[in-house]
Amino acid sequence: MRVLVTGASGMLGGATARTVAAAGHEVRTFQRGPANLEGVEDVRGSLTDAAAVAAAVEGVEAVVHLAAKVSLAGDPADFAAVNIEGTRTLLGAARRAGVRRFVHVSSPSVAHTGASIAGDDAAPADPEHARGEYARTKALGERLALDADADGFAVVVVRPHLVWGPGDPQLVARIVERARSRRLPLLGSGAALIDTTYVDNAASALLAALERAEAVHGGSYVVTNGEPRPVAEMLAGICAAAGAPAPSWSVPPGLARAAGGAVEAVWRIRPGEDEPPMTRFLADQLSTAHWFDQRRTRADLQWRPQVSLDEGFRRLAASYGR
Figure (cartoon, one colour):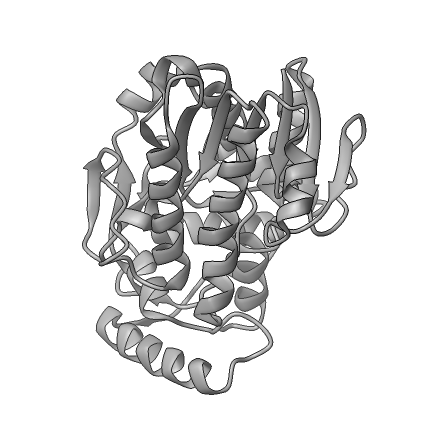
């Protein structure tokens, strides 16, 4: 197939474009900055530019949509412009161009209200109760995608959970930077079980969704490694791979949530240049269980992760020269 991958300048987007191309498909990428990938057609543009989006989907048969505004804080209008209206624009352009398969990359946060998740399947997106502008706008974008599902336009939603790997500028880089400056605490005991996804597994799951779209369209699937581990163990593994000290102090979860609320209030008035050090959503992620039942995902997508967490840690260590 001729496949458009949006957001290919990001870690997961780039890995997905390479994975789709390696499977024999012809790949075009679309994002604001250069993707810097060999063997693919690189198109520059924004989801907020309808003409650029229309040109990007011209002649393609399938779309894997990863481009999004991702942050713990920011102007709500910026999130809406990309995650809602940009998705709306892309869906409309894709249908007019004759695209037949559309894989929409979402997030488990669209259905997370702050309570622990222990072995759940993919719950419906819930923008009314989602925590933070990213989750709220991604939930609305996911609803738009599923509403567009139809015969001849097969839409599948995939929600990779906490994707990480070498070169990750989000999760890994921030954990390592804060650990090295001794600003990385555990929230509570660090015993809450969380599931994560090594980047190569997330990319192969998106390829599986693309190739299985006509059989499973209309569904939402959470994707993880299927190896829940305590938060403290995950943080320690990432820190060890980078040669950084593991967290050695803790903060009560309730205090972290209160602090996160205060930081959010300050960020709304005077945003910082980087991500806020704590938010209520981040406090929930670090102190409550969130792992998912993967049986339906693996059966429907006919997919299984190939890289274990331990192998992922070894690859991460190698990327740091360790």
